[in-house]
Image 1 (cartoon, one colour):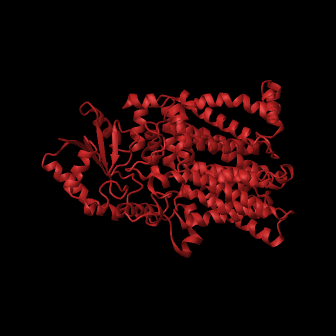
Image 2 (cartoon, rainbow, N blue to C red):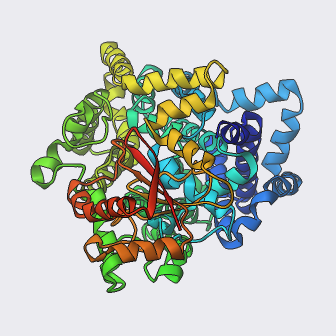
Amino acid sequence: MSELIDSQCRIPSAIFAAACFLLCSFLLGRILFSGFRTRRVTTSIVVSILTGSDILCLLGLLLGNKLDPKLPILTLMLLPLAILSDDGLKKSFTALLRPAGFRRVFSSHGILDWGLLPPLLVCLFVLGRAFCPPASWDELTYQLAIPMRWLGGRGDEIFPDNPYSGFPSLSGIAFRILLSNGGLLSPRLLVLSFFLLTAVSLDRILSPLCGRIAKVAIMTAFCASFPVLMISSSAYSEIFIAANFAGIVLLMQEKEWISRKNGQFSPGMLCGILAGSAAAVKLTGFALVPAVVVLMLSRRPPLWRNIVTPFFFLATVFVLAALFYSRPFMLTGNPFHPFFAGLFGADASIIETSRYHHAIATEKYGIGGLQGLLFSPFLLAAGIGPFDGSVGVQFFILLLAAGCGAWLLLRDGPKDPFKLQIFASSLILYAFWFASSSQARFIVPAIFALSAASAHFLGIIHSRKIIFVALVVLSIVSIPGKFAKDCLLSWRTALGATRNIDYLYSATGPGYVKACDVIKADGTGDKKVMMLFEHRGLYMPCEYIVCTPFFQAAYFTPPERTGKADVLDVMRRENVTHVLVGLSLQDPDRLPKYLDRSAKIAEIIGSLSDDGTLKKIWEDEGFAIFRFEI
């Protein structure tokens, strides 16, 4: 397995693939919207990359994995076309060819400033993780496992044993394109790049709202927040939602200028592409839609723009999201698969699986009721209660600052409505998070908006520098020690002091890597593993099917209706050669009541082992492997 990991984790090819993806995205955005003007060059660059990335993923959906190997060729074809079709890009490209022009392009537009120091330091801190084999549960279960399986098929399949393959999966398509061109490290590099785009957007949003010191403090508070660190250093899809929202806020901050300079071209269409793409990542992305409508509203004439711009926005969101949700609808009959199954069918197994995934999203995390609504932000900041992480105690200050700023704006009457609108959008995003799945990483768009909303009050009290020092210190001390330790180990691995396989063993927990090695070493010929109570398939050295009851509906769900003959029938029909049974303590999807109901399957496996149908070949560290004696 060590040789396989090393061959898939080559840093140069990963850098090349991520750079190709970003450049291709930028060129697509500039070509498609070459006539769209923004006041700041940063806005143009960020929005071009994000919209281009979204369009590239749409092409990946429509063309399947036929597009993937053509990414470098497509990039080379787009480069001269973009330069010829865009006068601004032509001038910039010509200037970049000369050293003096290079300095002038960057210094004249103020791209480099102290506000970018925190995200650059964070990037340096977590870059080692991008150069290490993916190891998080979600990466190994579906974020990368599903795109890797897509490479061997059409590129859009919904696998019956993994319901996450039914997500609309804009991010999954991006990861598939990257895996095809750069191996396992490239998705993490793209994710880190999207974090930088998000941070640059926040930096530009804060610039006119507060002074330099306040901006650096707020940037530190946001960038060092654990959910932001988490989705920026592993292949999580949530960074796509956060980055697209950041691009929208950046656009909306200069909406009046854009409306004057672009005539009839509505910024609602660009925002619709960004918000529709966020919704095309997963259902939680729909939270952006009402928040963005609030940001679009304007008090300046003509007021008909408050109807036309949101209309273009909503129409674009609907069309783009519908394209991605049509895939699960056509293949399963449910556009929101595996959620809301009861609305689209009557199959008992599918409904049971849907209930299980709803329970994962709503029952395990968060506090309900009015008490939870009012106090969850403070509990989440302190890391208290049923949450899977803390946003950091620095957010006590940002919460109070945003609240005080909103009160002052309402009392005095806002000269700049955007300041109040960004606060309102943070409340909408928080309400959606509270009403759906209260996992820490899902709240990142809300804390992005909150960070921007806090700038008004922190800008007013700019002379009280002790508050800004406190923000920076609290941000740093709130970084979990376990995460910091992993970043250090990642850098040791990236620099060659630790082997990739040793890092993977440490990061995935006891037993998993050993189990993969045992399966690979046992016998020759084609193998297929039935996985029970273990869902991480990315590093399985052969074909596999996940058969954990309730997690999927195709096999043994509900388990009460499953007998010994049913298990044998599945094993013969699917040509299973090995059975892997695991019960990892790291499993975030484990729910005790469903685990108790699944005990019958474990008993059947034990019975098959007793009668010799299954032969146990290895057991250690919470895993057991059986060979099917056909």
